[in-house]
Length: 245
Image (cartoon, rainbow, N blue to C red; front, side, top):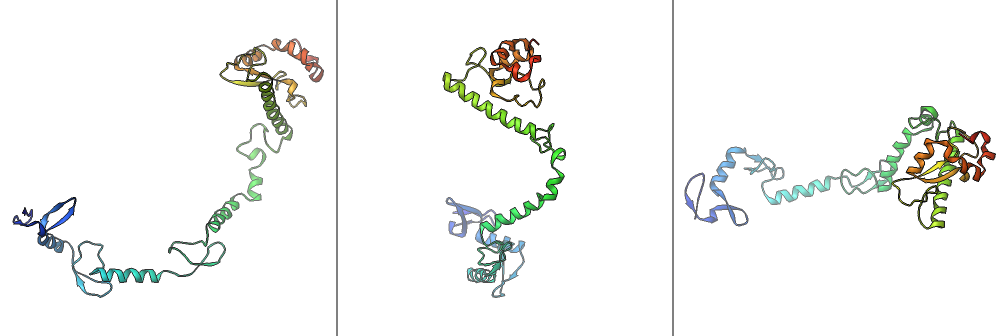
C-alpha cells in the first residue's frame, strides 16, 4: 500500500505508474490523468481524426496503430530519386538530406569551390613582394639566386652531419670535439654578410659543424677562423681580404 500525494488516500501499488528500478510515482493513475487533462486540451488524431486527450504536447496520434500508419506514410513521401548536385546524375537517396550520389562527388564539389579562390588572377596579385610570406627576397620568385643558394645550403648541411656520424659514430663538434651540447649548428666560416650571393658561400668547404658554445665564439672574433681559412684554402676562393680580421 502507498499513500497518494494528490488525493492522500492509501491505494495498492497496482494503481501507481512505475518509473523504473522498482520505484513508483508519488501520484496514483487517476490523479495523474486528471492533472494531464488540466494541462493539455483535446486533440484530433492526424490519421483517424478522432478526439483524444494527449499525455504531452508532442502527441499527434490517438493510438500505436495510427502512429505506425503515420510513420509509413512519411517514409513513402520521401523522394525516391534525386539528381546529384555536382554531376547531375540520378541516385537513390538514403535520407531526405542527401545531395550527392557519392562521397567523391561531395569532395569534388568542395574542391571546385576552393579552386575559384586560387585562380591565376588571384595568384598574380599575391606573388612576389605582395605575398605576405615575402622576407627579403628569400624563397620568392623575385630573387632566384638566394632561393637556389638556400637549397644548396640545406643539402650540404645535411650531408655534413651524416659524414660526421659515419666517420666518428656520433654527433660531435668539429672544433672542440664535444658530443654534449644543447644545440648543434652549421656555421659559415666566411660569413654571409661578408660575401653575400658568392657562388662558393654554401660549399661544404665553407661550412663547419659546431656546438652552440663554439658557434657563439666564432661570431665574437673573426680571428679564431684564420687557421681554418688557411687549411681549407678559402682565401683562394673568396680573396685574401678574409684573412687577419
